[in-house]
Length: 231
Image (cartoon, rainbow, N blue to C red; front, side, top):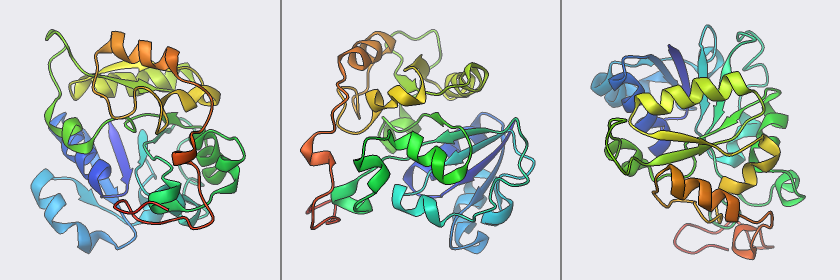
């Protein structure tokens, strides 16, 4: 498949590596331009591309940038993308550490529903519940017991099947977490967030989640602080 990745940080860089190992055609873009990607491109054989072109002609696009930066993406980013493009939202809202106050999310939207509003496209929520290093190092063949599972949420069953297949290819199981309206079940602060577990554990954690954003995951008048000193 042809995959465009928006963002080259921990998750974006890790997915570039994993998708290339799975023999996919990967293009990567960030706000600093292709020249800043030289080391990653040399390591993986991925292509560096501009933000304006990163989703054109792709089968899958991955959004892996800070939540606060999503409104700053080019306004016409998806204007010339395929109608069948599967968009994966791998972002997380960290109001006290990085993103500050985002009204739509603080008002009750799931993080991915807010992302959908910003980009004008439906998304599949995935890759947001695992540490980047674990995503890089802890994949296993399907036959190995205890394989880590990743929750995915979305409203399009065909798109979710595509993402589940991609997850399987890089060494993980996928667990359907429901529609985007229920993607709060896998947001930061939920029982399964950043806890590696097999499919049974993930399903259990999803069922135990509560649709209530805890105070530590809400913005304050002083937000944002830093990861070392949240505000």
